[in-house]
Amino acid sequence: MNSVISKEVKVLKLGRIKFKDAWKRQEEKFNSIIDTKINNRKTESNKKTKNYIITCTHPHVYTLGKSGNEKNLLIDDKEIERRNLEYYKINRGGDITYHGPGQLVIYPIIDLENFFTDIHKYLRYLEESIILTLKEYGIESGRVEGLTGVWVDYKKNNPKKICALGVKTSRWVTMHGLAFNICPELKYFKNIIPCGIENKEVTSLEKEFNRKVSLEEVEIKVIANLSKVFDFKIL
Image 1: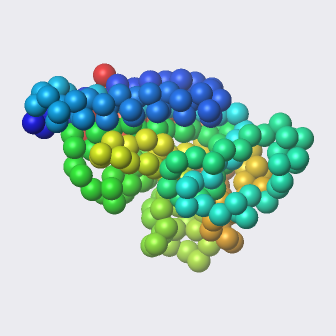
Image 2: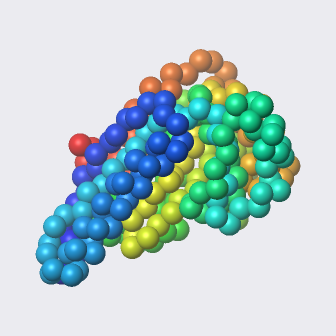
């Protein structure tokens, strides 16, 4: 028997947290949802699966997706240690990215069977939530054909990425998610080829808006836009 549809999402605001600790929290919620789905099928139960959105920021860290190329990390292990950085190979899609202070990271851990079973649509909805948020600051943004994420100057020859995406799904349950540059130190992106895409600049909301922006304010707006786009109730 299938689970009862639940379009309610609990938001967990973790604040500043080490990547490995947030990853552990993700895995716990992710596995719990999958266990519920498996148990429903085995026992012909009809228990609702839960949905979560984790929001946080991380200390300086580089993460490489399962299909990524290590050559896109431009510094070696010794330099990573010397600069007090971290580096993880992880189980999401995509290539290499950077997380750090001033960047809003959002990890939706949701059962897509509560919404729709279409990974492409899921990624586009994540992007749309950021596009709507940027619009509230008067910043036009959009997609670049053949690439994931959200870009400003996306109609020009040199678009700039402002939000990166990388997800994992199993049994239609999602984890990992998006990294939205609010006011990070952009110099840290120079140590990588972001997302494995050469000759593409990275930017931030604060740089494009040309004034200070509260990460907490942006967090509220992004969650509201996720709720609007996915049509869920925030718990």
